Each structure stands twice: as structure tokens, then as C-alpha cells.
Length: 299
Ligand code: SF4
Image (tube, rainbow, N blue to C red; front, side, top):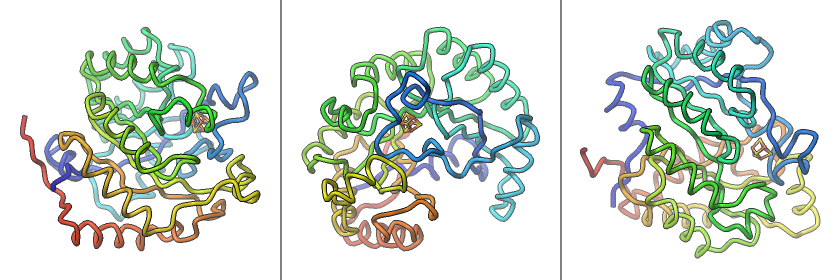
């Protein structure tokens, strides 16, 4: 069984080594702001993006600082990544200025915008289309699960049908959609996970698979302390991850195989703190089960 890794995909479209740099668009999200419900149960106050460069509002300085941080990777091209919070949750003028300034930097070959489907208006789709005509645009949608029942537990704040509509609209306009799914959600079984995989198989260009981890000061931490949530063991994560990959449409690019928790906030499972160990365990498990990186389809 082969899966299409992001490394291979980026090499095929950018022809040289690219590296993602995390930037801060200084936005919030609808489940966190004054009308919200306190945020998704797993989300830390950093808005699921503890690694982005903060403080400077000047995009050029943010890009300079972010590139300095990843100098050792020796990349020459960069994908500007707006990860924290909901990066289309602002006025269209604000977004236009921010995103155009970002892609006008010669070192940036693409822009990746993490957001929610209920925060993408038609006006926003037009803007993304304009940007995409100049430099490649990826839109990352935090679906987490295709189940609306699970979404309610997570306090995700929108229905799955909104994801379906918006991912279609974006893809119809030629914009690359990356869908985030979480493995080990409260109340979810292997069958729920495979339902989510089957659901996205014809709705996305890429996927990011994450392990659910418990962070300090979240609703999930309370559930964990009360014994209402038990995190996955590493063996169980490896098994479920492999199942997910085996059921995934092989045309879908796999951008992530696990999460990367902020160490200072991690409560459980503690093995996820050592990302290298988890990645090595995934590689070993995949090798033993004949799951290999390799592009199957050339279009
Ligand atoms: S995961 Fe995203 S949508 Fe949910 S609270 Fe965090 S920033 Fe908001």
C-alpha cells in the first residue's frame, strides 16, 4: 500500500526544497471571541498554533524572523503558514492586505491558510482565487470528525454540511483543500474514524492526521482529570493511523501523521512529547505493515 506524502508532493510542484514558516495573522476565532462558547474542548489559549512567530505586525519582519528560525533546514523556498486561530475571521480588506503582502515576498512560493468553513464567505473565496492566480494557495479546514455528534462534543461550532459545501466551492475554484482530522476523539471508535476518512475521500486534496492530546487549561483536561477521557496508547494510535491510511484515497496528499504538542502545556499522553520517537515508531509500524511513501497517481 502506498500513500502520497507531502514531501513528494511539494518536490513535484516546487522542484526544490520548501519549508513551512509559521506566521501570525493576529486573528481570533468565533468559538473563542465574545459570542463564542470558550473554544473547542482540546484547544489551548494559543489557538492550536503555539509555534507561530508573534508580536510583529509587520509581515516582512515576521517572514525574516521565521526564516532565521529554520535556517538549519537549508530551504530556499518557503510556504507561509497562517496556523493559529481562524485565519479568515477578519474583514476582507484586512485579509487582502495581509495575504497580498505575504505572497509578494519573493521567498514565499505558497500560502497555507488554516481556518473553518463557516468563516469563508463568497467574497473570501474570490480573494483566495485572486491570490491563487499569483501563488499557490492551500486552505486548511479543521473538520476533526465527519460526525456532527462528535462535533457537538468538541464544540466545533459548525455542521459538517458546511464543510461539504465550502470544500467543494474552494476546489471548484482550483484552490487546494487540506482537511484536518483528529484520531482518538472522545466517544469515537475505529468505525467513526473510518467513516470520517471515507467521507473526505472525495472532498479534499490533502489531509493532516493528528493524535488528540490533552493540554493544560482546556475542557479536555477537565474530562481527563475526571476520568471521562482516556488518551490513546501509542500502539493504539499506530494501529488506527495505519487503518486510516489504508482507507484513504491514495490521491490525497498526507501532510501530517501526528501532532506536535507544545511541551509546556502537554498533560497527556506523555509519549507525544517526543515527536522523533513517535515518528520513528510510525515508520517502523508502516514498514512492518507494507505501508510506504510513494505517489501512485500522476495527473
Ligand atoms: S481549534 Fe480553532 S476553531 Fe477551535 S477554538 Fe481553537 S482556534 Fe478556535
